Length: 226
Image (cartoon, rainbow, N blue to C red; front, side, top):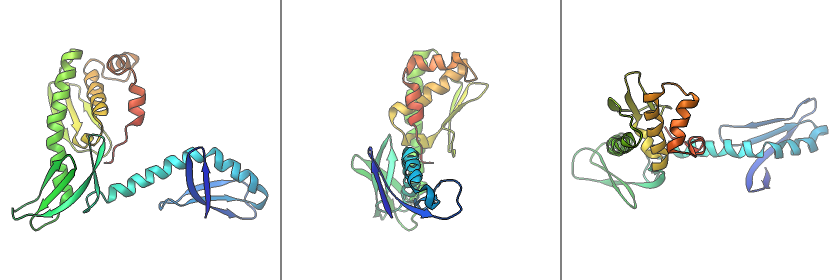
């Protein structure tokens, strides 16, 4: 394995040299292994190509690490995201029947009796927290923007963070409480703006920009482990 370390980007890669290759290839395996392939005659060009793609490689490697961490978040000693921060998850046997989550400043405690189903317990916590947090933020921005929803609903979704129906019913993904308060506020403002503008026109974005001049930065930075 070879080490690439330049301009703050660091990763290991394997350079495979094969005769007959007409082009230079970079592939990132599911396990995070970076493969660089080239012919013997393009070895120097391959390194230059690697440098050009280094930021792209680093971004994809970070995504792989996030996916791996998400698959372990509900294990004892794993990490659970809440309001933009990660907290440790600790298992604790309880005499009380059922499973529940207790959240304190130092982290989450999963209290269980017989069955160990922390994911359900954590998501129940998310659902209750989302209702409390989003309803308060909707009320705040509704008064500020003069835009009021008919009803607020909560659900779990794979990708969508929020939606606004034609009849101004707002729906929020309760897993969004993993995000920071600023990102949650952006989601609220985004959906409230749809009450006035049902599409993503210039008028719509001008409404969002009035509340969040840096909305493009916030939007591009939102990442959610669903």
